[in-house]
Length: 157
Image (cartoon, rainbow, N blue to C red; front, side):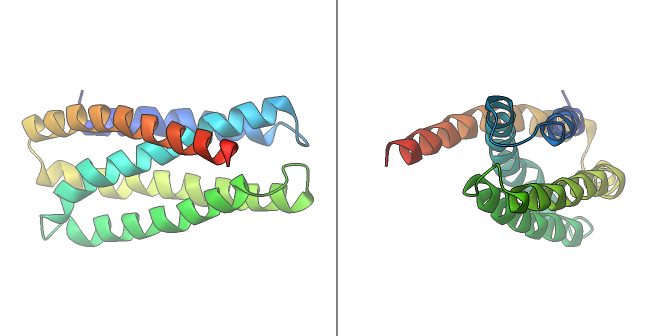
């Protein structure tokens, strides 16, 4: 599977989870479950994306500016996700920050799909895109285990 398809599949999953979280209220079991799934998936996705897709794109002069911009956005989103993870889900502040996250994250993935993928398609051959897709999926699985370990150790502390 090409890297673009792998990333888009995750993006679609994340859009769906954000919409479902937005339909929940308070500190409910459903909100916690959906948030936990979103949190782990996005954290592992972003790390794997940076290590495979963006690392390769930064090696090309045409891809470097967009890759750097996107990685900078990852940091901003990561900070917001961590902030939300530490907040009381029943507070109005949580919901306001979540709405900001949803807006910013959906803007980010739309930008990736509409602006960055076309640049990458000019930079990478079909074979390279396939290799990156395989590496991304393998790396994402490894990252998911790391994120889950960190989450469990945080609950124990």
